[in-house]
Amino acid sequence: MLDLSLIKFDQNGLIPVVVQDIRTNEVLMLAYMNQESIKLTLETGYMHYFSRSRNKIWKKGETSGNFQKVRSLYVDCDGDAILAIVEQTGVACHTGNKSCFFTNFFGQDKKSEVDILFRLIETINDRKRNKIEGSYTCYLFEKGLDKILKKVGEEATEVVIGAKNESKQEIIYEISDLVYHLSVLLSYFDLDWTEIFKSLEERRK
Image: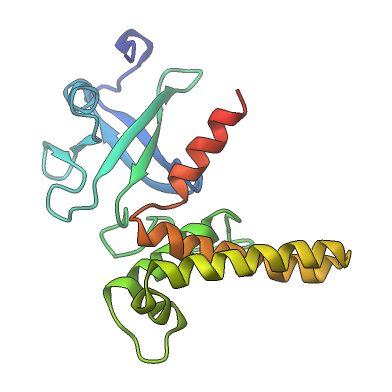
């Protein structure tokens, strides 16, 4: 439980909250919370904020379905800002972008290497739902589990062969193929890389 005594609310009883995706570490949005929205967040497990424009508490995703499951809350060293680590369903921004911070006005575009895994599986999930003529991913889902498993096995063997050949380029290419087909397998069972990362984290202990 969060110790509210650690928090320094402003004169309006609010504190800014930076929201970060637990899967990709991407900063999703900036919002505000008051004591009641914090308590609702802790009680329900889903992020609640205080809207300054509407002067009311709102649950993220209550109209869009893009909920944020809270994983952890941090307060900064001064106690005047919160970092919320969340599992984001869908997109965070009302514009349809994943993050509200999509406009780059200086410097190099930010990219998260691990984000490619989630963007890949989002595309695969879309192909599972919506058939596209000529799509290899759609073909795999049409053929079913046995075909997907066969491809996973074949690509795993190709990785071994590439390693035996001591070819770095071949290893990179074949592992990429394997990761793609593993992503299709995860999608088949309505899983994604979040569950895999959780399992890997457990193995670090």
